[in-house]
Image (cartoon, rainbow, N blue to C red; front, side):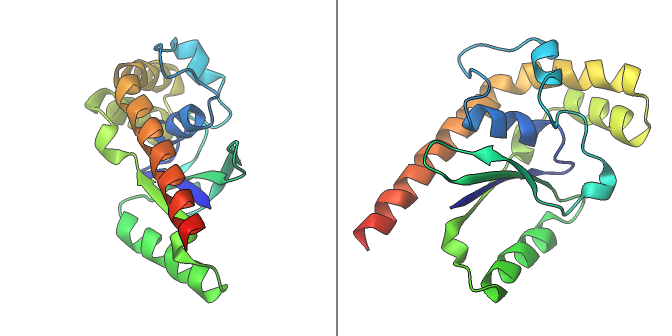
Length: 160
């Protein structure tokens, strides 16, 4: 299975949720901003990367995990991704798309815009880091929910 965490930019909430899912971050305690900055993709993905699947790693069951920035048109990007998978002979059931967008707060939006679009990294990065720390419990719950969904799909496939 391929697990894709997606949001607008794919550079803050999605990499953090993917790291939680992969147990690279402990979901039981809020990280410091410096912990987030150690993540490979945090505040590093550029707008030119929209629509590009960025591999993050494999989970303990061998499922591949990605992040994806969809920009302003997530439904178009996600439909194209599923369609392309079908063209290659893959099964869309093997693709789990996880929308992280509802868990992004206004502090993250302002900080992300300031850092990635305006390129005022010294102002935006600490702001988006703070916003991510505030959103962390919600992101951790989403990662755990995704882990359960992956397991349910695995069990369902084993029954077929």
